[in-house]
Length: 265
Image (cartoon, rainbow, N blue to C red):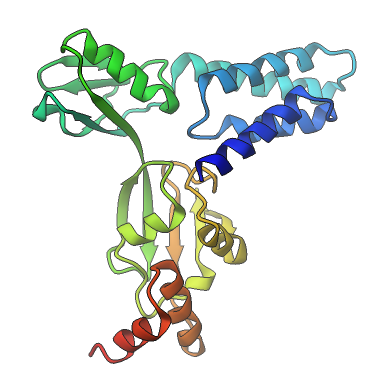
């Protein structure tokens, strides 16, 4: 999955840097801009290419405007970083048990940690987090072994056993969100699941099923903090198909899963 994600991003970078039409280069950069786990070097390469496109005599006025706008968003992200108040970071430091917890990001993009105090996350990307935390903690602790994971909040609602908000790494596969909610209920119409953002559906039906089947990550699926995964109620005639789909998601043999659901009462 990491190779899949890297290959997709590499293709976008090649498109931007290569001989593709300028409008296609800008479109690829717009898509890559919102990758949750994109590296600083990749973002800087995109910004450089877009800055060039924005002043190129070969660019149309519309393409120049798009390139300038997207480059501005990238430069802003590089300057400010990825973390917002209320975001959560899972931290583990082998030498300091008090630091082994999940901590909220404060109003000024800071972490307030036991033992070490305040650490600023201004300018830190998700992809930089491990390095940044190791660097900052090394100033106060001797040779710390640090594992830092940025979490995103996704809600899973509808026909799941435990609907609610869940904190997951963006590298989690899409089906992990369903597993966190203890899986779909026996009344779920799993083949009609969809993702909602700001009240609008943007992934649904077959494309959503394909992402699960291919083991796509939340980042691959363009799922962002605050998005909602909705599992609707099935129609009466869809029980067998639902059982089959749930068994695939949860990696349970169909016959065993079906029997346990049908005869569980």
